[in-house]
Length: 277
Length: 257
Ligand SMILES: Nc1ncnc2c1ncn2[C@@H]1O[C@H](COP(=O)(O)OP(=O)(O)OP(=O)(O)O)[C@@H](O)[C@H]1O
Ligand SMILES: [Mg+2]
Image 1 (cartoon, rainbow over the protein chains, first blue to last red):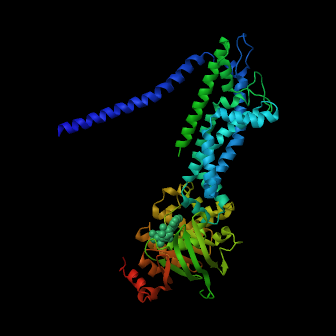
Image 2: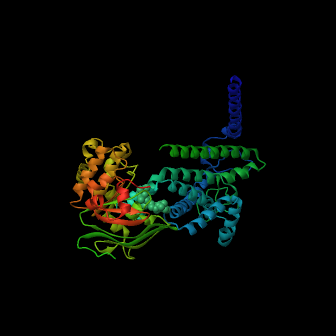
Image 3: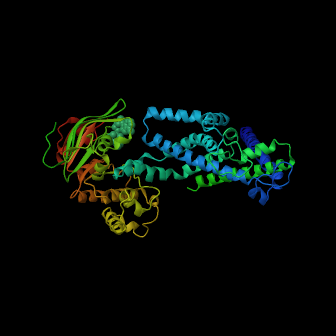
């Protein structure tokens, strides 16, 4: 009798320990990444980082303002293309789709989200950069949009599926057309979940480097034109980190800290949105 | 084919409903008279809800559902090719088995949801419609001081009366009710039954119920369904005192498997 209880308590204790170990194993690398980047990048954080463009090699100072703005532009245009397509696609799948076509779209989206992002970059290179005879911000945005679409599509569809059928029926039975029901009842009920999914998709592409290598290319100077190469924060970090210059290394750490903070905030925002129900 | 009587509001003609390979409603032909209350009774799974939901084309949303035959509303087939289900549903309202108020809306907004969702809510008219509709379902006194709180704060019975208020607020001609009292206490049930009695002056009502006494109390005609077939339909008094079919008698006297 006593031994049975003792054994149960010991098993319980052991299992708790195992789970604690697993939690720590997950948390430690995250903490390491964050603190290391904080340590290396913190000294590079100054006003110049956000207002200046990079100086030529050898010269001290400069910043990554063009990369930050460039990333913002790339993500903005990618969202303009990717979010409507992803959300409309999801509405079609969950509210209007017939089963055969829906299965095909769903399958394609799953395959697309599994394609390595560098392949997406290469495809956009072949389909956009070559015909347009040059690297461009537009090509970069398209590559990012291609990565966003399947993520947004599937998360939005999941959220729409969670809206109870009885709500749609309540609205339809009042003589409200299906499109208005979709807009004002279904989408509205799922809005918080959809916004969370969108934020996570934006956070995901904000850090993408590979698909930009053959599309947006990067740029040492200011540019806001969609048909010209443009700087992007992850690209700049990559290029500066592999360069031989100390001052560029310093900038790369600063940029990394900015990028990690941005993604961290987006994830937090997404969580907060998802929770405030 | 049944002959269409003068005051037939709704006529089902050889209605069949399939869900995939499941033949849920078989060759049902019946008539509901204008300004009458028709009750649909029968054991669970016999197709009562399915019949009711065909009358305002709720099966349109279910990909596996196939409806054939005809349903005439004032003599016109609501399933014809050119027919617009939206216009038809404005004339045929529905109260569901489980209360389903819009969870993100206030009590007030729920009552006038039919107007708001259609983008035709005129502010000056809404207050009156809200008060009137809530009065009719005797919910006004209970909620008049908190019209703008979330509708989910109401009890189940109050929510169901809210859903009835929402349905009558848009002034349909027909009201379909799928076991509207299954979530209500005896007093709310009584109130709803009184309401049905009152409503039939202006509306045609079809009500599905498991409660024999309720069917006997509120309806003018009663239809008994079994395994997707209409076994018998007739004057409620006659069905409950002197049914023609043995199955009907067994069911209403509780001698049923
Ligand atoms: N959406 C659906 N998809 C597939 N089959 C369905 C669907 N709705 C109903 N059915 C089937 O149709 C038949 C009749 O169901 P229905 O809901 O009309 O019964 P009911 O008489 O209303 O029962 P209850 O008294 O339990 O509500 C059942 O066999 C049921 O499985
Ligand atoms: Mg039912």
